[in-house]
Image (tube, rainbow, N blue to C red; front, side):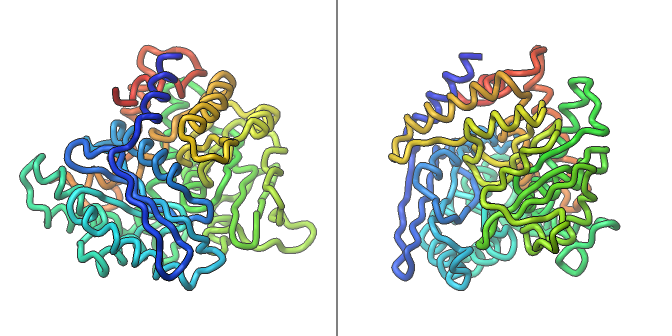
Length: 427
């Protein structure tokens, strides 16, 4: 296992190829585009916006994307856009910030960098719509289609871009869960949560573990956490506790008997849990959301922001009785260092990862939450279909294959992070 950790440390401490820094001239927003490498002629990674975004976060996430592409394809480098701006407190200025950001990085988006939605940035209404209008591209993944895919199969870039546009916006209909867009959802809404759920389902099958009846805690009930819970409920998993955070603070939902996750998704206020209703409500306001770790559970899905899992949280998770994690959030492990020293970040996160790896069965983030990245890769292929069933089937197959590779010849139930780094991190 030590070899995997050493690969992680070397890879994450190596300086990235490109970092572009931007300071908005109309707000306090600052943005960073990190391209870890232009392996295969391109790099990919979504755009996130949050009040504590940083250059180091962009670097870490770009490297995580590089590993994720080793899992799901295409054979390109990792990238990431991080904008430090509190859109929750200043929502009216958000769109203007995104417009100026995408205009600034437009040359990369046209030639070698593909992006998409992420924390506080919607895939369709913001990333796709704004890049189309401001940069003049047909889809925010067009840079990958030009820089990498056009040299792979010879298909015209325009055909790939058209397929990306229609596939990412493919309608997904659930008879038991009406969506926000004329009663339907889009692939971009559901595929990452679907992938997280699929990783759990496949892991339990490969380990000959019973999934039906498992009790689950989900940190973060936005698109990823909500649909992971929705799909897992269909497999008999019970959602016991979850949380969200918005401009008003944390909201927590706890039901020891288990929620009907469909009702909970349907009652959300945007991507937040519904407002508390009365003293006996199962939903309540919280200062820290730590109450979700005061229950008994078997399965944990971190699906909130990055870096939320501290040493204290690991102890809380052990007290819960949790055995298995599926990482819906990228880089979920915390760090204490305030100085922008990447080597210290790596060291502190590795300390936590080693502790967690000894006590839990952890499906790594670059396997569990690769659904959107895999969707992009699939739709860029010349023979791809743009209907929801085909896209979800492909994502499921990719995650199945990644888990089979992760577990091949490995019988231990712990140490999966180190194993994943050894198998998937590039030299």
